[in-house]
Every structure is written in C-alpha cells, then in structure tokens.
Amino acid sequence: MRFLAFISGLLLLAAGACQKKEVAPEQPVARVTATLPFENDDIRLRVVGNTVPNYSRDLHFFDQTTGLVSTGDGKIYRTTDQGSSWTLVYSAPSSDVYLNQILFTSRTTGYVVGGNTSCNGNGCVPPGGLVLKTTDGGSTWAIAYRKANLEFVSLAVNATGGLFAAANGAESGIWRSNDAGATWTRTENVANSMSKVVFNGTSGFYTGGGSRIARSTDDGSSWPYAATLTYNYVNDMAFSGGTGYHLKGYGPALRSTDNGTSWEEVLLASGPVYKINALTATSCLIWGGGPYTGGDFGVYQGAVRQTKDGGQHWSDIELSGIYMITVANFYSTQEGYAVSGSKLISVTVK
Image (cartoon, rainbow, N blue to C red; front, side, top):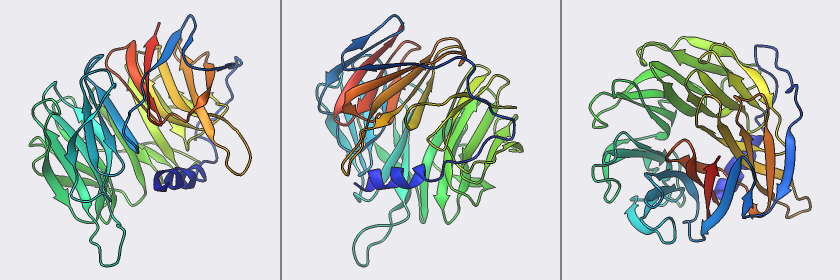
C-alpha cells in the first residue's frame, strides 16, 4: 500500500511542457486491447511465472533463466529457472529499506542501491542510504556503504567504470565512487527530488524534480544544465546510441535524437507510464498502465507502448486482466522480462 500511495503522490506532479515546443505525434498511436498471451508481428508477451516476490522495484536477468529482483521491503531474490521459483539471497537489517535499483558491471559484480530517510514505530532509527555489492553473480550480497539521512534511488556507471548514484535526503544530489563502491563523495549538490542518473557513452544525465535535466559530456566530472523544463518531474530516462527518451511526470514521453541536447514529445499514452527500455536506436518499449477501470476500487491495468522506428510511430497495447507494469529488464536487444504484480512476463521484440 505504501508503494501505491507513493506512486499516487508522484502522479500529481505531472504538468506543463518542455522548453522546446512540444507537439503531439503527427501519426496516430495504434491502440489495441488484448489479454495474455499476446502476439503480433512486432512483439510476443506471455506469462512464464506467478511467484514474483511482493513490492518488486527492479529486475535484472543475465539470460533467459537466471535473474534477480529487488523489493520495497529490503529484500533481494534470485531465480535460476526462468522465474518459476525465487530464493531469498539478501534481507536488509530493516524492512523499512527500499531497494531501488540493480546494476551489474560484469556477470559477477553487481550493486543494489536503496535506503529510507524515515521509518515506522516510536523511537525507530531511519535506515539511511545503502549500497549493496555482490561479486558472485548475485548469489550473496554484503553492505558496501551506508550513509545516514539518505536514500539512494538510482545508480549508473560511466565509460571508465566510475559509479554514480542519485540520492534524496539531507545531502541530496549526485554521489560518486571511484573505488568500486567502497567510498562515496557527493559531487553535485541538488536540492530537489532526484529520480534518475544514466550514462550514454561519455555523456551523463541526471534528473527528477526541479524542472531540469543536467548533462555531463566529460564522464561525470561536470554537469552543466542541458535543458530547463516547464514541468516539474521526470520519472525515467534511457538512451540507446544518440536516441534517448524520458517520461514527463508519468505522462507523455519525449525523445531526443541529438544525445539529450533537445527534446520533443512523441507519445501521449492512454494511461500512466513508468519504465523505459531503449533497446536500439530505433526500438523502444515504454511500460505502465492502460485506462483506469473506474469506480471506488478501480485500477490501472497493464500496458506497453512500442516503437520500432525511433519514436515516429507507436503501438499502444492495453493488457486486460493484469496489474500495471512498472518493472522491466532486457538481457538482449530482443529478449527480456516485465513484472505485473506476482506475474513474470516473457517479452520478445521481433
């Protein structure tokens, strides 16, 4: 429930338009209502498991069979059978810890970031920011770094192996580690809510609240502002080559074809959008919800938006009978998984 309340609150932040004049897509979005399994000429979706752990916040698969999920109650689970079963491999000292993002820099070495600046119960001590590390492909995890009064919400690696984390809390901003996660230093003081840090070659980007996207062109050494937005919040961003996408406050999607120098609106979805998988310069999936079912206990059902021509045309596939999709990961440019509630959905892009 607390995760749903958090998402509902963030939905209220969406408004406005980008500095560059944004226009609706010239071509209509092709909308389809379907149930799983679903297959057309462009994509195949099928449920392969029904035991994904509760409160999943991120997903990472190495291949078709082996993957991990991090959760909003401080746990990491691992599967070696395509999601048919999951084994608990880490549990945080407190269930108040959100484990927000998984990042592997090799098949064996990976990180999970999270934390919380609050906690439940009288006299409780907030767990603060947490960086976890594995050196055996996710079989075991240990705390690499802790910081009071922070929550690490996103993690990225630059072209030379430096780690960057976006953090919220008393010392919000961009934190950097040059020693594989053992020590961290705040390099950017950002007083607004952070949501994402990503790298595309030697270019880095961070964003969140505060109506701006900052860009680095020197591997994260400096971060001049590349775009000032007239809307407040960006909840996800992803690049493949020079083409990138970001989501305007859980609403429209914007595209850049010049490595983040300028942006234009390319998709107005039928429901909220949460997660971007930029697979190639022309292929991208955006996950979220379809139309609201209505009523006092209505929900957003699942949906995926797909382009295969770099954002010029989109299909909007609304999936009845499953919950909204906020987590997805690809282990190749064509194969990956998405999570809807406890369901693991196999995704093949054709």
